[in-house]
Structures are given as C-alpha cells and as structure tokens.
Image 1 (cartoon, one colour):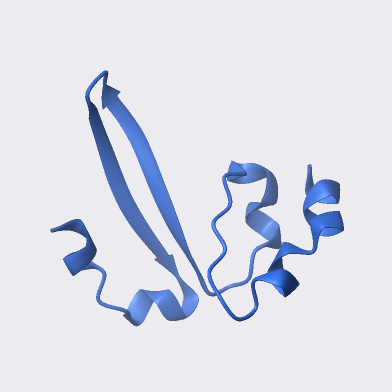
Image 2 (spheres, rainbow, N blue to C red):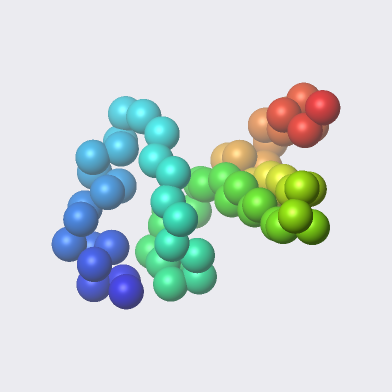
Length: 68
C-alpha cells in the first residue's frame, strides 16, 4: 500500500544512489517525476522481454544501448 511506501522512506534512503522497487501500480503516483520504469514481461517459460520506460529527465538519456 502507499502507507507502507511512505513509512519506509525509501526515496530519502536512495537519494545518492539507485532504488529498484517491485511495487507496481500501487506506488506509481508516489515516485518522483524523474524515474525509469523497467518492465519485465514473461513471454513463455524460457523467454522474457525487458522494456525501459523513461520519465522526466530519463527521457533524454540514451537507453538503446541497454537493450542491445
């Protein structure tokens, strides 16, 4: 829940680093404007698809090399 998100104060703890959260849509409205969504989809038992969805300042970063 967003209450748990607020209680953990994760954004403060990760101010000088990287924070990865598997919380999905529950906290989408609570993350900063500048963030990168990494979406992992299961295509079949052995295949996964990874998409990078930039928001805010991430939109100007070269992310294509991450998918090569």
